[in-house]
Image 1 (spheres, rainbow, N blue to C red):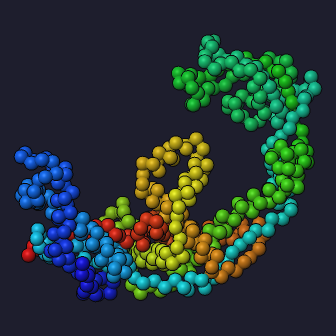
Image 2 (tube, one colour):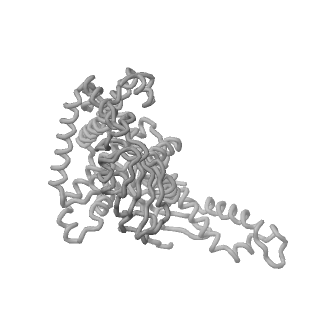
Image 3 (cartoon, one colour):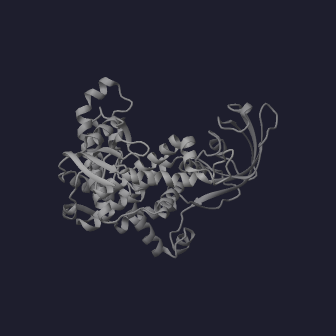
Amino acid sequence: MKVTVENKKGLNKDVKVYIDKETMNSYMDEKYEEIKGTVNLKGFRPGKVPKEVLKRQFGKAVFGEVLDKVLKDTSTKALEEQKIKPAGQPKLDLKTYGEDKDLEYVLSVTELPKVEVKSIESIKFDQYSVKIDKSETDKRIKEIAKNQPSFKEANQDTKAKDGDQVTIDYKATVDGKDFKGSEGKNTQLTLGKDLFLKGFDKQLIGVKKNDEKIVEATLPENFPEKELVNKKAQFNCKVINIKNPEEVKIDDTFAKNLGAKDLDDLKTLISKQINDEYKNSLDQLSKNQILKEIEKIKVDEIPENLVEEEVKILSQGMSEEEAKKNKTKFIETAKTRIKTGLILNEFGEQNKINVSEQEIQAEVQKQLRMMPGQEKMVMDFYQKNPSAVASLRGTVYEEKILNLIKDKAKANKKEISKDEAEKILKEAHKHDHNHDHDHEGEKKETKKPIKTKPKTEKKPLAKASKTKPKVKKVSKK
């Protein structure tokens, strides 16, 4: 195989590939040997059909298969040999081809630009840690205690009031008739929360232990017996017990009930929990700062085909007039996103960042934990959508790159209070809101993650391709 590069115009170039007919014939002979053992022709024993007979019978089909394989293998090898990373799908123009002929073709390719990433390590960004004041931890623990009330037995003649826990047995009827699920035993209600049926609690205010009370309530929209939805039911209630709320004592026992070793351990855990609530948002601000700095790094030329493709994505679903109106903004957005993706990918490749299957599975498991009850649906989605798995891989890959940049770049470490953290996040949210308002003509796609692809996908960058190039035209000679 002989490879030459011609017509260099910026990132565009033609890669000429020549394979002599002797090599092509050897590929053909290999294929004939391969099929000889599988062909059954009348008058010939299996595996003994002469090559000339095979050529007459299957010549065109065999040549088509061989040509397809040779083009696929040699085009990939030619680009690798010339150290060319294509931005998008190269176009293939067959010049000379045929049985017992030389093969010559030209790959018209747009190359990914060379990117300098050394300056990334000089990027400056703010890295926050939140100092949680003791009073904040105590306040959070008191809130937890308030939401986990303790109750003590009320006196025999105590009348139930808001906040009391009332235990009842009940039997319900609609129009005087029993229905499925109309009986309940030892049902506990905290009066005032209205968690059973709307308006049910307030009818029990004033009852005493051993009282009987008829309570009327409307059965809700989600009631299992559909024919009874929105119908009034009568509940014959027998009051079994009444308990008054008592203040929860915050001590080691309380802490142990929450899974901590003791109260000091609980305070440590709660302090960390509060810190973590701010950490993710503040870390994202740091990464946004890094991305903004990366946008300032100069890249001499952005491949036009990638820009055109990105603009199409940004304008999806828009009318022709709306797309035309926003085209200039979309072009700038596309260039910025592609440039950032190129830089991140180059940094990822130079630092040999890969995404393992275990990391993908860990990310899927994280999503499963965030969607309790819908685990099967999430798993089915990823199993049936390889593109969703590829997108997830890209997200994990980008996250790993940004984390490594954070480690290597120059962090301006700041310890801030919880109030300062809230102020910083509020300002950032306000800025993002104003930014969205300024660009309200653009679609939400402009906010999507930057396209980066891990090396494990064997594509040096988003839109870079090593697949079989598209045949543009055929000029047989």
